[in-house]
Amino acid sequence: MAQRPHGHDDEDHDDPLTHQDFAHHPYLILASTTPGDFTLGGQRFQGLNGGPEFAFTEAVSLLVACDDQAEIDRLWSALSAVPEAEACGWLKDRFGVSWQIAPRALGAMMTSDDRAAVERVTAAFMKMKKLDLPTLERAFAGPETVTS
Image (cartoon, rainbow, N blue to C red; front, side, top):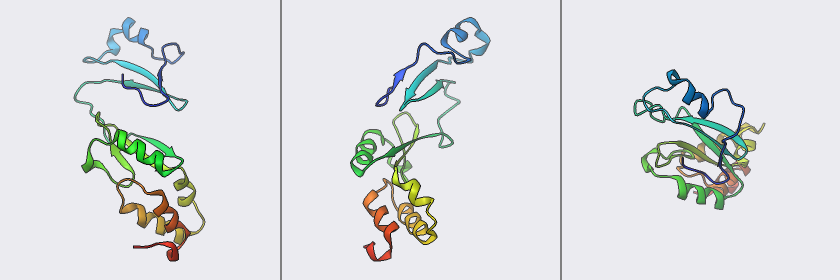
């Protein structure tokens, strides 16, 4: 199983479906399913390989809230493998998993009561592939700080 930074396998847990459940109840196994449990950033996940007919889609993505542009750049460089899938902070990795690599500050910007600032930020990020935090901060601050 691929591991991400700060991730680890969870072998001992009390979830309803465990590795042992699949071994003792063959009807749970469709094609060559392989369950896998892991933790990312303190959040537990369970993945299941349902076979080639169940591909990853953008319907599910992993969001990483980054503290600064250096972290955005590092993760983008490490994860992005499908350039044509890049848009507005979204990327696809080599496994086809969609990720949202976004600055943590974007949440506060997008929920601001200043509707004009929200519109400026939205207009700015809609033009981007990888999000650029300094540009978003300038857009949020006001039109006098935005340069073409």
